[in-house]
Image 1 (spheres, rainbow, N blue to C red):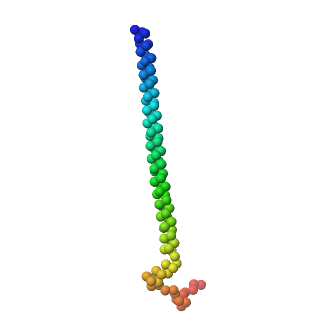
Image 2 (spheres, rainbow, N blue to C red):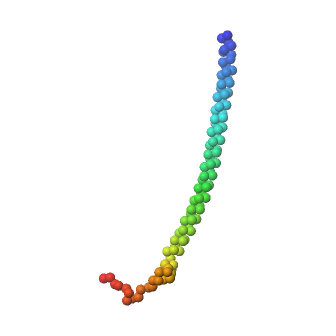
Length: 98
């Protein structure tokens, strides 16, 4: 009887080793797949962020142009005369501060 258990022990041991190797193989396969999925997801996120960055840079350029247009002295003078009724003061309206 002692010899039977010794003969069965190596086969169980080989099956256990194969089972552990298969578990390790599948664990590595799942880990590799997870890494690839994360890599692709980060790539998509990066491309979306770059597109948003380009959109925001374009918007910033447009706003700078609009700000320059709104601050132009000609526009301010036109608004002052047409909408507010202001005129350039004459010499008799100016007060000199000593």
